[in-house]
Length: 481
Image 1 (tube, rainbow, N blue to C red):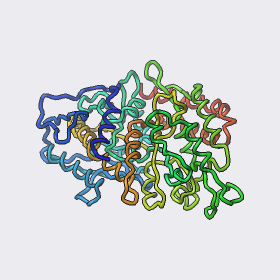
Image 2 (image 1 turned 45 degrees about the horizontal axis):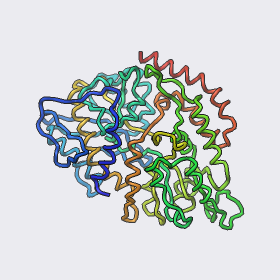
Image 3 (image 1 turned 45 degrees about the vertical axis):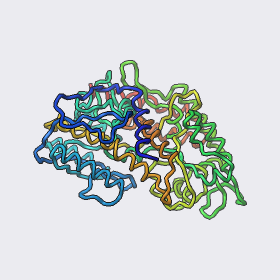
Image 4 (image 1 turned 120 degrees about the vertical axis):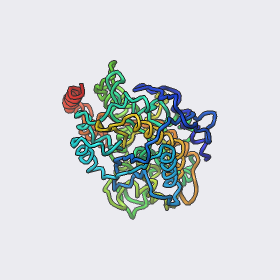
């Protein structure tokens, strides 16, 4: 897969519509250069504004984890790893162009909010931006600790190096309030995408084609996935489909509760939607939500065709079962590819399926997400936005192609179809804004568990949790406006 093809996929998918929140052009009359070295007919031209920081520092507070996500945003020197070096080259180019020194301060996800909050409370202009975990910053948003990004013209949020889907879902109040913006400055967000991993060797043995063309044709649906799940279930001499690491049984699909949530979101179900004023309201009482939940409950109800396996230890874990060739499919975060590098069987990746063919697009659930925030203590918003936007552009142009290759490196082979699927999935990312603000966390967990237990009590679970969600939304909006 050539880099230019990947970028064409990304551009074509993202340029079909304009960004609705802060749709500024970011144009300027003062330019020093035009980036044409790698331009094609489909790639936007990037204009770099004139800027000289006179050797000063540009400091980013960056989220890190111990969970296997790729969170590095800076390196002191080239490492020889293609992905690392693409990031190093990005930063070096920008440091030379704008005459500054990039400083990345990595902080654990469990501590980063308190670190940023302490800096803001002290009135310090210590961090120009934070790459913050969106599911942990609700209180900072309602405390008005972050700058409204929709008001900053130098952030070209309508361009494909920013994530339109997630930014649209995060933008409130007639498209005038956006306190974090998604890009791939940290690859943690793309590592957190939920996809369907498929064992290609098992597909060959079953006489089946990988569903790549079904995805392209918009025909990768819950029914299409279920037809494969049924084929993948086989006792192979075992007495039952009860899990045994030493057993021989194979399964159609092995997963966990967050994987079920990914299927639900993928099938067009939403917990929160926007009303006519672009304010958040509940969506989990919509017919589509019930239809999707009931269908998923049905297709994961048969022993062998689906197995819940998430004991957080090897080998009793969905990722390890897939790695061992014991399941045709698993739903997992893209970061799981790091555990499959020495997997004996080949595998491919596709997005979670649609509900049916009438669904207009794929929805790829992603969690957690690290997004760009600018603290209100920042004393030079314009300069910060210029550098941040340029970093987002170069990440999109140069870093993402290396990321796709790195994520699918397997026995020194690359699956070109899966690279295409990853690009499609990146452009189809969605997340639940209710989880960012904590409105729906309890309900999301309870619904997933209900689906996994047969789905017979979904309506009562929704009824018992509805008022708490509505109250939480109202309280948040009162604090914001």
